[in-house]
Length: 241
Image 1 (cartoon, rainbow, N blue to C red):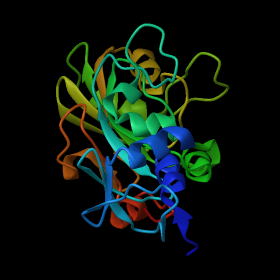
Image 2: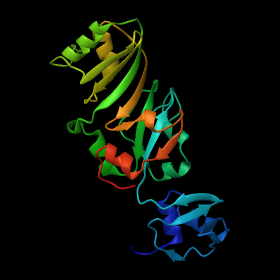
Image 3: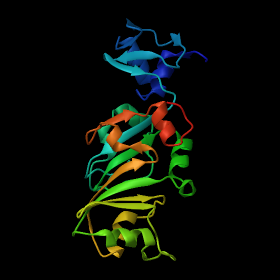
């Protein structure tokens, strides 16, 4: 892989403008392999390069693939209107890199949220024709029985939809908790389906995307991590981290 000057490497990783990155280097705030580098012109092979900025360790990644356990009352927008944006839960370097959510969760919906600066990945994961299955766990407004499950599996009629919409799977965990698997991404789909079936969604969390399950990630609300190769494969994604 072609070598790049250290200022270009830092800029690509979200540490600011070229001028700002040069200042960090010249001020002695950047180290590579444990050695402080003060010449921004120094070149390195970027792939897998380990470095520190203000003693915080980083590894060069051409593109980043993240998973966040989204808390309630955060908006999946770069310009939030009523609540903080999910970007405030991430290091500011990711904002510089233009990391974007893959699709959106409502401000009051929690759980799995993917983010990346790879436009092809975002498009592939969010395109309606992909039919990526997703599992949601809903807290119901009133107790339910297997009749609700049957309605969701048979299909319910939503306003502005020409045909009934059915869940791929539905499991009643207890009278007030249901898991619903869908492969569409229609506006407020789970909430609207439950309302059409005569119930109400009091709380909602996305707990699985493809083969990636929140329960396997050990992420508290508000925490994030890089997706590794196995986790990307669980999403049927091609890019490597």
